[in-house]
Amino acid sequence: MEVIVKIGQFLLSLSILVVLHELGHFTFAKIFKTRVEKFYMFFNPGFSLFKFKKGETEYGIGWIPLGGYVKISGMIDESMDKEQMKLPPEPYEFRSKPAWQRLLIMIGGVLVNFILAFLIYISVLYTWGEQYLPVENVKYGVVCDSLAQSIGLQNGDKIIALDHQKIKKYREIVPDIILNNPKSIQIVRNQEEKTIDVPDSFVPELLAHSSKGFNMSAVLSLRLPFNKLSIAKLQKDFPAKEAGFKAGDKIASVDSLSFQYYDEFQAYLIAHRGQNISVVLNRKDQKIKTELQLTEEGKMGISVQQSENIFDYETLKYGFIESIPAGLNRGIQSLESYIKQFKLIFSSKSKAYKSIGGFITIGNIFPGVWDWHAFWNLTAFLSIILAIMNILPIPALDGGHVLFLFYEIITGRKPADKIMEYAQVAGMIILFGLLIFANANDIIKLFAK
Image 1: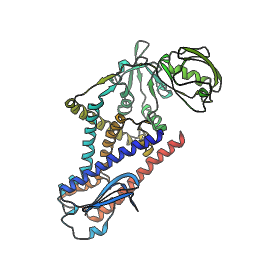
Image 2: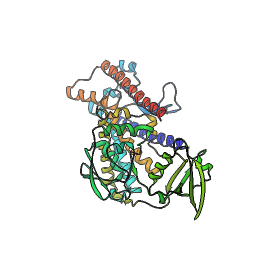
Image 3: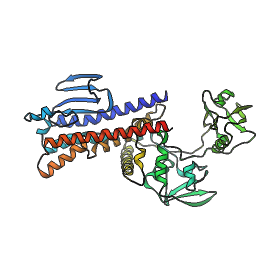
Image 4: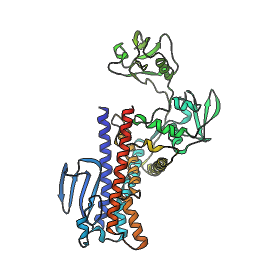
């Protein structure tokens, strides 16, 4: 069910973004009285799932969910309609329009994506506000995995700054480390401030580590007090369910030992993997003693939840007018963040290209339950990604057409049709190569899990 929900959110988000992106091209084409022959969501080689014609335009839904397109008369695009280009140009064709009009038609989709992202962020902040955990409210510090521990961090450390720059929001710590590559981390350990030096190898290792399993691995996670957690779910055919555990139970002790933090409890289970243990449960003020044998991985087969509020979150509420500058600022921050991420791909030190993912990676950023707040935030960010990717100066993308148009505007000469055709083919080869590479990375990660 979780997979279906993720796929559903991904397809809905993609459909919204594709239709509105293509609507940007379509609108400017209509403004400048340029004929649009087709308007398709998704690609339709061979056949369409649905189509109808209204006026001069055929509207439809293709069967390959890789994007969408509008086919504009008199334009060399992915349709490679060479026969039309051999005929004399008609007044309604793209090639007959002034360069500035063709430029606006080509950047129309990107403009819509940027505007859409800002409008979504404004709406999200107006509707839900913004909730975050201030760094100073991380009461019990963080839990560090082996990678974080390798640079000197320890469970219980409270991270307060990167390169001596104070951090406001807890969720910004790991992205800030990845994007800004700090040389040091400032922490509080046992009431004493310390500085941890960050080696150059940390960010590449963090990127590789975080891309495994299609999510950001818990390199750093919140440390949770054990006595404030209860059992949320039991996994089928695991020891806890067979031993009589129930949702809502609290674990009082294991082998007569109590634990202060959840990570200490997990470490004990791993240290005793495959062994029999004795567990005392608290169930509605009753003590229940049971025994079970841990799996070879040291698991009981439970997930936990907070039985009471642990952390003090800050919530910012915005009125309609206030949400506008706040949403614009959020959009600009997202844009800057993605540009920094994009630059990492071309860094030989970061080796970020190994973390590039395809449709499985994108689908997995959506939550496993339907959450409109998360859905719209992710759709806004994907809209920015789509805009940036489309404006890249690669033939077959909007940015490739824009590049040739700038050449025409500067020199006063149109590139030859043959050059445009060859460039279109080369661009499509590049795009298909990137598509294969990204999805091959997904398949490798899928089998490496």
